[in-house]
Amino acid sequence: AQSVAQPEDQVNVAEGNPLTVKCTYSVSGNPYLFWYVQYPNRGLQFLLKYITGDNLVKGSYGFEAEFNKSQTSFHLKKPSALVSDSALYFCAVRDMGSASKIIFGSGTRLSIRP
Amino acid sequence: NAGVTQTPKFRVLKTGQSMTLLCAQDMNHEYMYWYRQDPGMGLRLIHYSVGEGTTAKGEVPDGYNVSRLKKQNFLLGLESAAPSQTSVYFCATDSSALRDRVKRANVLTFGAGSRLTVL
Image 1: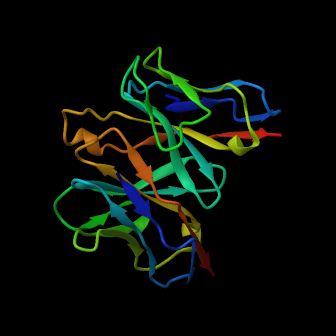
Image 2: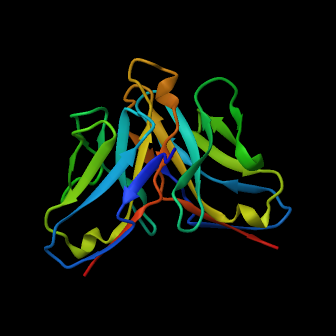
């Protein structure tokens, strides 16, 4: 069965500092991995995805994520945080062999202080 | 182009009442999903559909039913609402095709959400 874990409910970072939001996953086959962001009272918006190839994936708004197969992780990163990055972030996984279901993590609230 | 539209946006029910949430999409996507979002629980998949006339259970299907009579619509029904079903419900779609490895990595398009309160 697929599963996704986001071990941190909240991450607090000062503006201008680098940020990391952690995600680990479990699938029976090879994974497709995604990060989505949710702003207040809105639906989720796509940030980036990993399919295959380069382990470092670049996405929207300066975010990137690193796929690590041995650690089954897909951490979201940004070199310099902005106050406007404050939002709820979700990691998600889709099993390549069972394409119909996408499973989400519990979410991490990112708070950037000025 | 509206994308994914959910109705209603807000609803308050009494325990035992029934209701239906409608998800409508104009993107001709094959796959449609219903998720519920609860604090600290993230998004949990209720039911999904891989095409017109098909439905399947997700992680938390109990207490819900779904129908996909038309490709563009995916209905989520609560036959007898319970307070535990108080949540924000999100519909999502994507154009994945089982036979297309690249398309299986398509992203989801979400509706704006429906906030349901059961008293």
